[in-house]
Amino acid sequence: MSTFRGLLLSKSEAADGAKFSANVADIPLSDLPADGDVVVRIEYSTLNYKDGLAIANKSPVVRKWPIVAGIDGAGTVESSDHPAWKAGDKVILNGWGVGENHWGCLGQRAKLKGDWLVRLPDAFTTQQAMAIGTAGYTAMLCCLALEQHGVNKSQGEILVTGASGGVGSVAISILSSWGYDVVASTGKLNETEYLKSLGAKEVIDRATLSAVGKPLQKERWAGVVDSVGSHTLVNAVAQTRYRGVVAACGLAQGADFPATVMPFILRGVVLAGVDSVYQPMATRLAAWARLASDLDLKKLDSITTTIKLGDAIAAADDVLAAKIRGRLVVVVNA
Ligand code: NDP
View 1 (cartoon, helix red, strand yellow):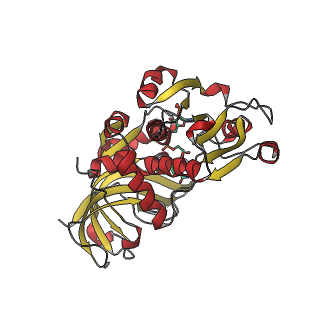
View 2 (cartoon, helix red, strand yellow; view 1 turned 90 degrees about the vertical axis):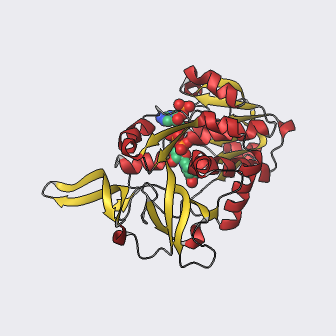
View 3 (cartoon, protein in one colour; view 1 turned 45 degrees about the vertical axis):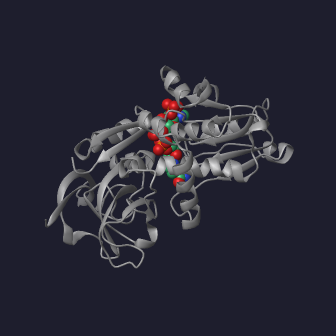
């Protein structure tokens, strides 16, 4: 095999400005990036929100052209010049700028740095690892942030925003399995039964959080996992109880944060930012270990929809339009 199928994003100069294209193409193996030291036969990748932005060219996610898209993937090592990895090893890749400034995992091969890879936990197949994907691993980082900042079950309810999305669905599953009372905020009230099946105790309309609100509101949440940002995050902070913790990882509503300092200086609320891309290896391994021990695989299955590589371009628009429930896994060999 001298080529592999991959989802290639390109920009070419045209008289009326740069012209963007997204195609599934047969790409020469010799084009794989020279600065990787492990070639991985990717089996599954996913469509995260960031992949949606990159494939639809809606935000400056990609910083190197052309590029194979895909910020995460799981598969089997084909060859390695890195001492930690050998042919046959099962691996996971999340972040490190892959799919942004290094060729990504929405293709049958990826050439990655061995220092970036996580060994597939025994608990998961490569398909399940990508059902979790970057969104699910980020959900675990958010849940661990609540735990590390001292939130416990006796302190009250946890709010999860963007509840029917990837981060939200996995966060609900984790927090409910840890025994928390989880309240899910969603724009899809028709998904109430789904959200309750994941473990939400109550489902609220996201419209109650998405508009401008007062700087300090009635205290309700012991903790929050927010993947939405903007006024939703501001209102969630304003409703957080004394010394509660808000883990913020996303911007589905917006990147703005039009808040006051009042919840921080009068209630001691902690705002914990969560980044998954450049998270140190020790934290990644801890997050994947907790996913392996704590995530209910039946719930994971109910969160997951599987699509073919050829359907990924059309699905990117659905991701950005919030039409997807849970996680989209991409079979790169189909
Ligand atoms: P998804 O597309 O799966 O889910 C996002 C959810 O947000 C939607 O399903 C919807 O949930 C809600 N939403 C969408 N648009 C709006 C809106 N205008 N106002 C309020 N809510 C909205 O994305 P992911 O779960 O994969 O990612 C969520 C966010 O987290 C993204 O912004 C992503 O970039 C970010 N992220 C950040 C990471 C990091 O390293 N910091 C890593 C992973 C993700 P519902 O219909 O239920 O309301």
